[in-house]
Length: 229
Image 1 (cartoon, rainbow, N blue to C red):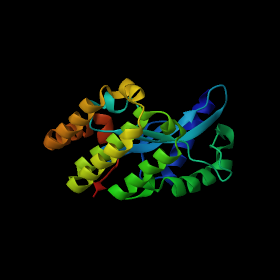
Image 2 (cartoon, helix red, strand yellow):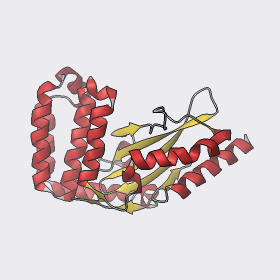
Image 3 (cartoon, rainbow, N blue to C red):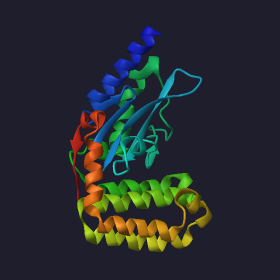
């Protein structure tokens, strides 16, 4: 067991060395604050095996407290290798696959390596998830959560034109949503939309909550970059 801990520690150090924009939130959770969100890589141990899988994750920073923020990511997916498969990396053969994993990560999730992140780059990432994540095909709640993320990102930057653009997008795409599925996640659609519009009117409170969460001891230790319009 001691050897295994040492191996995992070394693997974490290699990830941090190759993606220096990230900090260790926990041994297998490597994060960075980007404006109103936390992005990073989680090294998930696969069940019943001595392998791990790197996942890209993105969490909100505007919820009532840090625990709620980190309860579940808005976005999570496994980067694919050169054969189009997920990386399932044996701990003892980490060095065999690691360079390929980093190269694929740079191509598929360039946001991780950017100094500051533009709304355009973030939207491109979200749209890619909307297009390629199979759960978005039948889970209107998941789709709504991604448009909610777009809204909050625009609100954070103060770009009112983009805020209105996202509302227009929601108006269009929601026509095809399964509202029963949506209501399991968010309750009544009209109420959810009204709450978003209230946030728009109370931007200062929204920003204060983000700042309060950033002051959390573990969040404050993370590296920080800005989300820009």
